Image 1 (tube, rainbow, N blue to C red):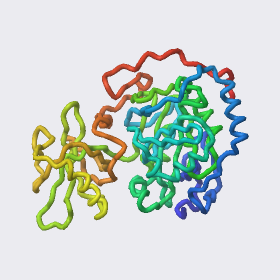
Image 2 (image 1 turned 180 degrees about the vertical axis):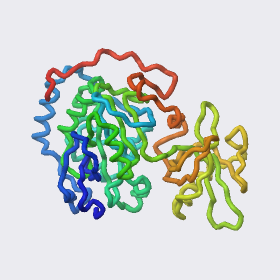
Image 3 (image 1 turned 30 degrees about the horizontal axis):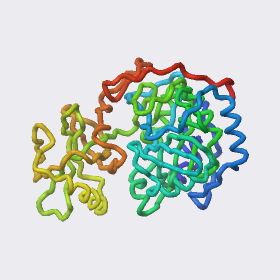
Length: 408
């Protein structure tokens, strides 16, 4: 944290950010010294169950919602994408965490930590699982599993390797609550849901509340850029939760230029001892796959071996593209199943990536999740319209039930 010396800083969600802007009234200014982190980076200090129960009773007694069983196998609500940040009073802005989205089901000490495709993270991220087990609450929580490096930035590669090396600080940033003690909260507003969540989050360094600021998205985006963050998420304060849909009530604005792509093949130069020289990438475009270029940097020997083992069962003689791209070297095709993330400087007029760098496999996503969202940007002047990731319309919603009291 030496780079923060003699800098005015702000802290949001436990991450200290450089701050040279005068706005951002919702973020708490802190001293030049960073709060000390526990020596045990995964220490657990849960809220006492007695006081937590009283807090839950106070909350649920003020809810005007029908009782319901705990939902299962939900798909998380997804964000649309826009190119520019904006200021708007009825919106809030959060850090876009570079990690794995995860819904958590907590019931009577039983924990199910699930990926966006309902795969279990219980064993892979055991400290998060154990921290959740120590949280005496019956609820469905939405959040993101992240590994923070020494600078306090999310490290996606570190997250992928954490199961093997346990390097970095493993954190579960929680930002929404969908169900609580028999009450469906998804028809409440975002503000109401987050007010409830904030009161219930335990005091430990694994489970952390993902804080937000109101209104000043443009300034907050500049802070994200200055700190090398992936971007920010804009959320409409009065939005209900629509599981499984990509809507304009949630919008992501990327500070870094990244692409999620499907691996369609690999190249191998002559006289190389590497397993492959580059990966051939594409994106889903309707029923077809469109070529977007090759990525040949960002790999280690170990990551190449891991990727190649996953490619072996997918070997095929058939090119996934309508037109075979010119790679200039021997190219070997695979079935387009594995999704990865790449960082690049810009796209050419032909839609090809310039200076791409491999960031890691996206085990939590499939080709069905790649819907060309990067280029189908939503105009900020149309942010009140719903947008779905498919042609299906959002289901008709019943009138949203409100809290009996404005303040819980």
